[in-house]
Image (cartoon, rainbow over all chains, first blue to last red):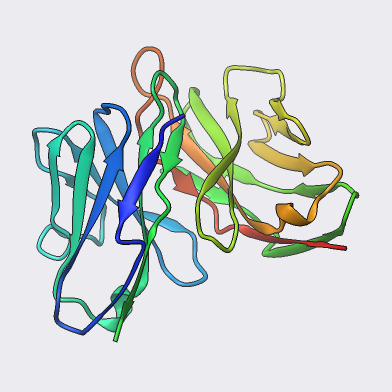
Length: 114
Length: 119
């Protein structure tokens, strides 16, 4: 399995501000993934973060709103920019386990935008 | 495109009894993986069980087992001897197999089934 940590675990932010979420994996991985879970909903992929290249965004998500960094093989950040109440969600990162074909998740960041 | 459907928004079961959660999926891929994840109120996504599409044998993990019907594109989860700690949202997920020896692709999730285990 993989051990994945996220910071912060939760935050309450004001409209128009930005928040950066950090994700740390205990092993080197090629890809990391960022998901959004809106209240009462399932998980939706925001983007795939590849080390050494730009992230690949899913339809409906753009880099200006959700910039992603991937400076090395164990770490990634997701920024939620110019936040509005509609951005209130749980944001989760995931990564594959070492030598497995299974995705493991961080504990998530609960974001509330006022 | 792949889709995953969970037709039971909510279910309940008495402690110590058995419950089955349904999941169907649609894909044109032949090689893929299927998963059940559990999300308790703590919101942590926990892997329950994993199935490789090329394996005919159904996966089992202690009290959890699946009924994988590839032709029917069905992947149900059976929880035996239900415990209060099984109370959670359960998500069925699909991942395409890419490359030799596995995949690092993203997951496609169903909408989830909220399971309540009653004492």
